[in-house]
Amino acid sequence: MPMDQINRWTMDESSAIVEQFLHYLKFEKRFSEHTAKCYGADLSQFSEFLLNTPSDGSSSDLAPLGHHEGGVATAVATQTEQEVDQRLLAVDVDEARTYLAYLNEKGYSKATIARKLATLRSFYKFVVKTGRRDSNPLTAIRTPKQEKKLPRFLEFEEVKRLLETPSTDSWLGARDRAILETLYSTGIRVSELVGLNMDDIDFLGEVIHIRGKGKKERITPISSSALQAIQHYMEYRNRRSQSNSHFDSKVLFVNKHGQRLSTRSVRRKMDKYLKTAGLDPAISPHTLRHSFATHMLNNGADLRSVQELLGHQSLSTTQVYTHLTTKKLKEVYDNAHPRENMTQDSYAPETSIGNNGHA
Image 1 (tube, rainbow, N blue to C red):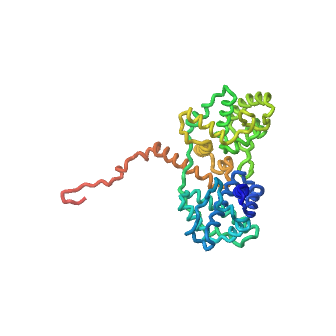
Image 2 (cartoon, helix red, strand yellow):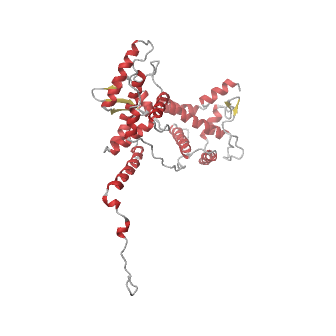
C-alpha cells in the first residue's frame, strides 16, 4: 500500500461506520471537534486491537498496537474498510472484556480505561440505533471503580493575589487581568472564555452569554469588578483594532495579531502569573472554575444554582464540590464549637476502689 494511503487511512479511521458515528457526534450531538477526535482515536485503537486479535478472542498472538513503520502507524492500515467494519460489528462481550484487560496490562489508568469504555458504549449504542446490531455488547460490562479525586481550589486570598498580578498599564496586562477576573467571576471554562465575542457581554444587565459544551448556551451573571476589567481592556483593544486591518472585530479576547486567543495561550499566561504570584505552578485555569464553585457554596449558594452557573448537565457532577464544602464546614465546626474542644476524659467513668476491693 502506498505511504500516502497509509497516512490517509490512519487519519480517517478507514471505517465507514466510525466516520458516520463521528459525523453524528459533531453534527447531531454537537460535540466539539476536539471531543470527536478523542472518540475517533479511541475507536482507532480498538479497531487495531480487533484486527490483531484472532476472531476467537484469544490474545496469545496479539501484535503490539500502534506499531510504526517509517513513522506511520500501520497495524491496521493494510485492512480494507469492509474488513474493519465487519470486525467492529462482530464484537461480543468477551472480546470487549479482553480489550479492557489488555489496556489494564499496558498500564492505562482506571480513568483512561473508563473513558475508552464510555466511547465504545456510545459507539455501539449508535450501531444499534442505526439497525446494524440488535444489542449493545458493552451493556454487560461495568465501569471500573475509580478513586474520587476532589477538585483542587484556591483560597480567596490566593485568588486575590493571582488576579492582582497582571499590570493593567499595558494592553496585554489589561487583557490578562480581564481574563483572570472573568474566569473567577463566572466559573467559565477556558474553551468557553476564548469563544466569547464582543456582543456576548451585557454591561447593563451584568451577564454574559456563554456557548458551552455540545453547543449548549447559557446566561451567567458576571461581577462588576470583572466588567470593569473588561471595559479597561476594551479601551486598549479598540485602539489597537484601528491600526490593524486584520483585526477580528467580533472577538473579545484577542492575541497580539488581533485574532482569537487560544486555550493554550491562556494556560501559558496563567503559568507566568502563578510564578510571579508565588503560587503552585501546577494550578490550571480550570482551578479557578473549581474555586468559583467552592466559594459560591461556602457562601450559601444552593447546589442547583451552582449547577446552572457551571453549565453542568447532571447535578451529580456539581455534587463533588459539596465534599469540599463539607470538609471546610467540619474544620470550622471543630475550631468554633465550644463542646468540640472538650476532652473525652470528661466522660471517663469515675471509679473508686474501696477497702473491700469493690468499685
